[in-house]
Amino acid sequence: MRIGLIRVISLEDPEALNAHGEWMGAHYPWLEVESRAIPGFPEGLYNPELERAAVPAILEVGEELAPEVDALAVSCAADPGVAELQERFPHLPVIGAGSALGCICRSLGRKVGFLTITPELPEAVIRGLGDVEYRWEHVPGVHKTTDLARAREAIMAKAKELGARGYGAIGLACTGFSTLRIAPRLREELGIPVIDPVLAMGAVLSLIGATKSPAGRG
Image 1 (cartoon, rainbow, N blue to C red):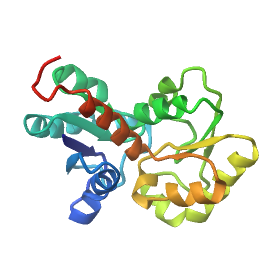
Image 2: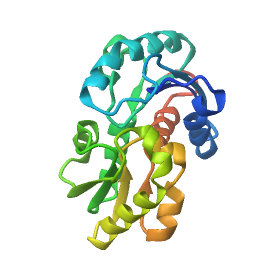
Image 3: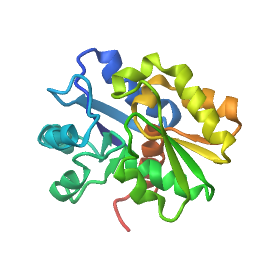
Image 4: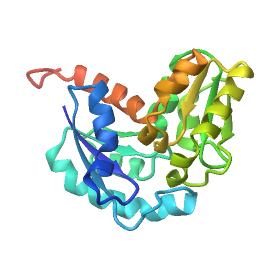
């Protein structure tokens, strides 16, 4: 299944650009991921104003990818541009990291704690949670995705705090956590499920691929 992955931070280095696609492909090798980044946002999207401003660029990259892929994915927990892409390409599945994360966390059937880079949990995540009890913690000293690389110990401390409060799973509410590939370490330390947003998208995309008829029927 061919996936067009839209990165919402402007990246020119191929290794950085492909980091999320390679992370997804390592866990779901049946997904062939083509990654492209939007221009003009070198620090990513870390507030609602930037998310709105980035929608035209996201749509432009979606236009480029759509003829080449079986599905589009927006690698951001706020799901910027997802609704617009879904309207523009009704024949293609369009997945956002936030809604995928919320739905996977909801399926666990337990209290979920989230780590964020902003003071609020993204609405796209909340919409997927239904009636699940949840709480979020803003990682201290982190205000944008590019801050996360210097905050590994703060991330661990906040995750442990959520575990101590009785939250039986942790959701990572920014795809910058996926860049760090920190979910396995948190899961090992806490002994509870830790849901990575890029891998949540991969799980949803895998289900979509599994339900496609081999002969194009059904």
